[in-house]
Image (cartoon, rainbow, N blue to C red; front, side):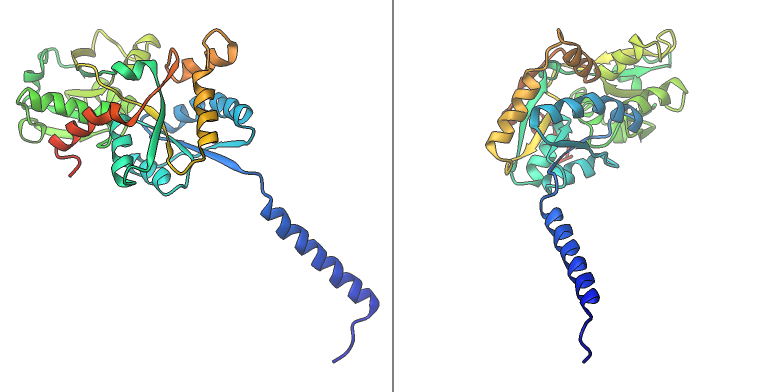
Length: 290
């Protein structure tokens, strides 16, 4: 076998050194904290809401933070359960699903103050629909099938009123998101729809819906809803730093004001899994969790 020339030897050593540096560089890659959210609004709106929060969390956690969108509610559940993301924005029902799916291995950290007494609304553009009973024989849209405020709680209220959507409605539709439900009702594609009160009030405030044509016909009783949830395997120190970051958000600072307004929150408060027992019970009684 021919021996290598000195120049070839130097080249080989240089290549080996480069490879070692590349591998060692991979081993010390900057950690990335990944965040996702249930797609209860349009992708562009979710991305817009995430930008200042991501910047704020990067500063507070001292690491790169990345917002990772998902295709649907089920994907948001699986992403956290399988540790593909570090934190997820869930509705009450998606939290319950993630808790059941993970065998109790997820922890809700904080919720908006508004989420302690959240509500859903039924809306309609049909003047003949004034009560829940008037929905019988009509076409009605929910949001996503896994939505707390866009499906589970409205369905629960209907069942308590002895109205079975699957039997009493002419057709049940699922728009996939709260803003899509408003659009479907406003366009006359369905006779009525159910969605979360926060999105409805934002559309009204921004004059994105004509309230002379589309009106609220029923508002549900209050219930616990959205929260930021992490996997139970997250180190306690990181969990505490994350919780403090949310609790420290203050509407009297420019940064806090921007984030809280985009999150439609007055402030964030601590939460716990027990707050969502009522939602789990409603989901089981509606047959949405076996």
